[in-house]
Image 1 (cartoon, rainbow, N blue to C red):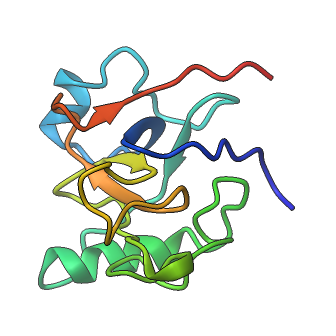
Image 2: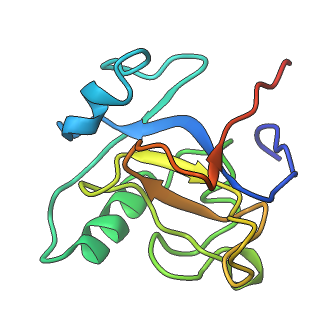
Length: 136
């Protein structure tokens, strides 16, 4: 087993995992923690903009980060796009459209709501995103 997984659910929870791909929201929405290298608290995933559409870019980024463990992405999913996480829940890897990771699933969408779900996010606030502090 790798990492510590907080299994709550009910809303998309923001994480400090992202790709540093030059997206404008990295400066506007994430400037307090965006850096050039991973730290003990933040994981910066490698990225590729190769692909004809965002789905291909998501999958390429997923494959590029296949050796990253401890974040419950590779441990619980088989692909970076679609519904390929445990129990057929959403697995949308970060890409040029959304450089930040959201985890968990939203309370109003049963088809994607699961503690293991992950999706890209653009960093803009809304009613179905939140965060939680975890002390280790």
